Length: 88
Image (cartoon, rainbow, N blue to C red; front, side):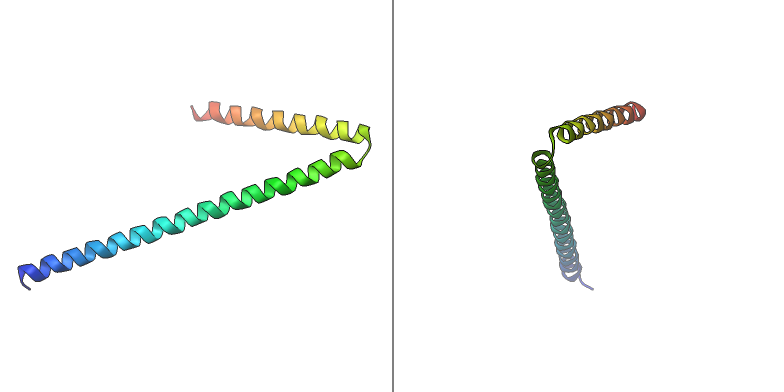
């Protein structure tokens, strides 16, 4: 093989590697976009169901739901704080 043929082969291989990297980045970005979209859709559905439950029932049940939601959010915050301390 001549020196020119070897150089041309190396350029071709570099170009193929570049194309594969671009393809992989595109696929990863699409997976991220799908995940964000599903997260937004799930959040909207939960918000709609929560709003319907809060408006549709008695005052006592709505107050109880708010109290439980507040406790759950507080517990998740505490758990994340504890995990942060463990990772230090």
